Image (spheres, rainbow, N blue to C red):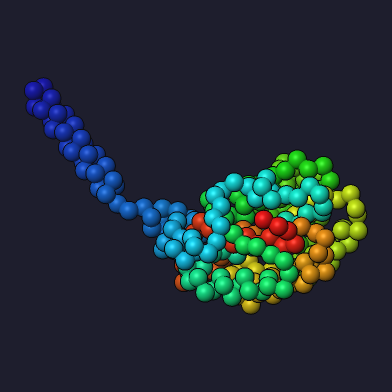
Length: 252
């Protein structure tokens, strides 16, 4: 009997030692590896910090919704979310992108984004209680369950167009602007979602041309997040939590 008690005590002590050792080892491990987070949420170099050059050049905004601060109740508003448009680590890259807007009245700012997901960006940025509004997307309404949450954030009408490129969607927005009572149009682009530079430039040029034709429309263009549907070497060229914002045909 005494031997059995000693054996049980020894087994218990071994169990405590192994458990304590395991907790210690796990506590020392770095879970910022690909197994700690989904790949598109992993941090990149300089993820939270902006260079002094960025800080000197741009007005910096926190995570507060742009629609709360920049909506112009005196005229029609178009809020555009450009998919996979983030703030590059190299300042001259963003300079080339923003140069596309020079031919229309504009001003720039950098905006904080807390998560690299479209659903987060849309839920935060597009939530509103404006009476006459519509949301557009040139893809499937089932993507990210948009057919549900876009209504939840305040949109009375939606227009989903299967496999419609950015040019087609801007044509639909052209038609919508014939409705004088429409106060807010929101649109999320698709063409640049892969992180391809040529596709991004093409989308931005289409937006600039549209803004030049509609000088009476207040247009706010912002990125959804840095590119994520791409190779890590491309993704890591961008800040994790910052996106560009361009206000067209509007004053500060």
